[in-house]
Amino acid sequence: MDCVVTTTTEAARCVFDETQGQQQVLPLDSIYKNTIPDWNRALPHFHNGKNFFKPVGNPVFARELLHFPENAKQCRLVFGMLLRDTIILDDLDAANHYRKEVVKVTYCPTLLTREGDRIRSNGKFGGHQNKAPPVDRLRGMVFGAPLPKSYSDICVQIDLLQQYYSAAVKADQVNQELDLHVESLSTPEMKQKKHELDEQEKNLKLIEQKLGMTPSRGTDFSSEQSKFDMESTPVPTKRMRREGTKKAFSSEEWVSASLKKQLLTQSPTSDTNGSLRKRKA
Image 1: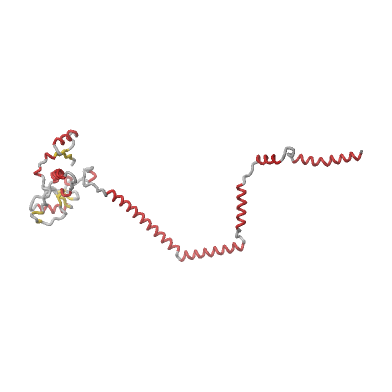
Image 2: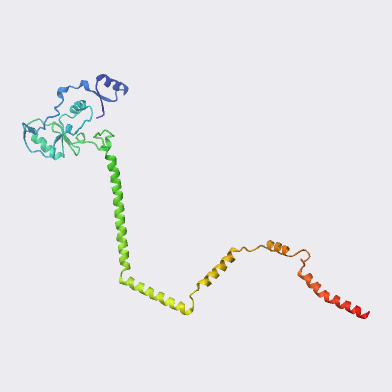
C-alpha cells in the first residue's frame, strides 16, 4: 500500500492538494484508537496460561516482527491499525491446521504464510487475490530493517575470502602438477635416458680431444680482437683516399706513372748521344 502518514488532517489535506488527489494519505488524529488491538495480546491458541493445542508452523503476530527506533508510539498506532491481529506461519498447511483448531474455541484473524499465501479471517484462501506478488513487481514498496554498519565490512571480507580461496585452489593445482612432473623425472626410464646422455657427452669429448678440435683461449681472443678491429675501423671513401695522397706528395712530386716511365727511357739515350758527339770532335 502506497500511503503517506501525517500527524494532522490539515497536513494530509496539503499533501492531497499538492498531488491533485493521486496520493493516499492517513492522518493520525483521525484514527479510532479503541479498534487498535492490544500490542501485548497473546496468540489466540493461548488463553488463561494454557495452550488449547500444540501449534505447528511457528505462529507469531506480524506486528511483533517490527522494530521502531523512533516515534514508536505513532508507529504502533499506524501498524496496529493496518495489521491488527494478523498472524504469520511457515506454510499453507500449517496455517490451515492452525485455523481449524482456533475456530473451535475463538475467532481466528487473517493468516499469512512465509511463502506468500493468505487465509482471510472468513476462511477463504487461494486465487490471485490471496497470493503475494513477486518482489520484483513491488517496485520498492518492500520495507525492512536497515542494513547494519558492519554490512559493508563483512562484504569486503567475503570478497577477500573468495579471492583467497581461488588463489589457494590454483596453488594446490600447481603443486600437484609439479609433483607429477618431479615423479616423471625420477622414473627408471628417465634415469636411463639421462645416463645414456651422459655417456654420449663423454664419448663426444674424447673424440674432440683426439681430433684436436679443442680451441685454445688465446686463438679465440686474437681472432675475436682482429674481427672487432676490422668491424670497428671505417672503410675510407674514394674522395678521402685522393685527398690523403695529395697531402703526402707536393705539386712537383705529383707525376703520373706513365710520365715517369717515359723520362726514365729517354735519359740513357741523351747521355749516349752526348758521348758520341764528344768522341767525334
